[in-house]
Length: 113
Image 1 (cartoon, rainbow, N blue to C red):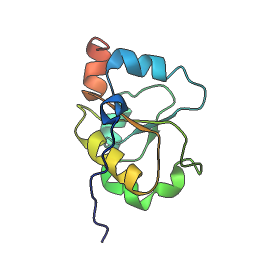
Image 2: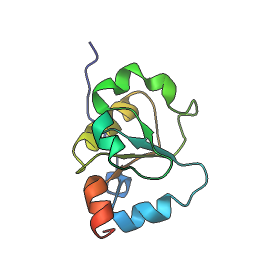
Image 3: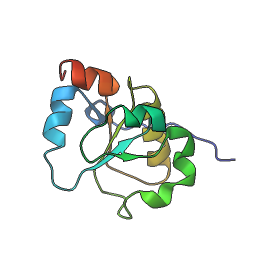
Image 4: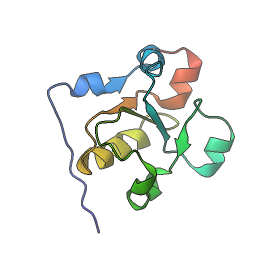
């Protein structure tokens, strides 16, 4: 059993991106886009280039993530709750550049902010 603790930093606020900020972030060439929704949700649509690892499987599928722990990762789910949990998991496993899509895919598609 892995115990998850919350990692916080002075720039935590900068690690939560609104839709418009996420659109800019996604223009970077090396961003890994991680969808932590269910298989069914993923089949209904996803961000371009997103890799699916449902949040409840994330700890067992870390080998599917970039080897470099400083790779920028944008994590998202449907409404921004599961992605916060996933972000914490990734940070606890040493990933240093993890960003959460605030409001999830729903907000991103609705208006980008």
